[in-house]
Each structure stands twice: as structure tokens, then as C-alpha cells.
Image 1 (cartoon, rainbow, N blue to C red):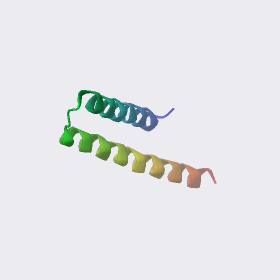
Image 2 (cartoon, rainbow, N blue to C red):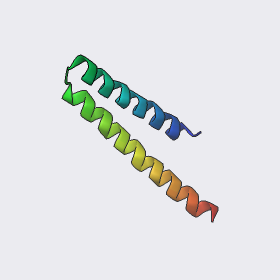
Image 3 (cartoon, helix red, strand yellow):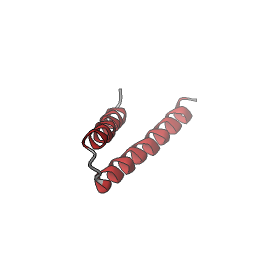
Image 4 (cartoon, rainbow, N blue to C red):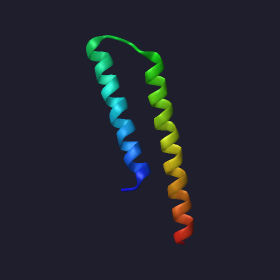
Amino acid sequence: MTKLQMYQLVAVLLLVGFVIYSYTTDVRYHIPFFILVALNLVLWVLRLKERYSKKHTDA
């Protein structure tokens, strides 16, 4: 597992935990939610870029 995959796993788990916490306590924090979503999107794009570059260097 690469560092990027580890970061992605941690970010997804944080987002899932935050969503579960928000719905169980009925408290909505919009800013942290959007920050976690943006972080997950950035990590997803970086992972796609990593896969694309690895695919073309191996070929």
C-alpha cells in the first residue's frame, strides 16, 4: 500500500466517522464536512494521476 492509499483510507474513514457522528447527534457542521469532502476529492484525483503515470511507465 502506498502512502497515498494510506492517506486516502484515513480520509475516507474520517469522512464516514464524521457523517455517522453528525447524524447520530443531529448536529450539522458544514465547514468540516466540506473540507473532508474536498480532501477526499483531491486524494482521489492524485490517486488517478498516480495510476495513470504508473500504467504508462510500465508499458
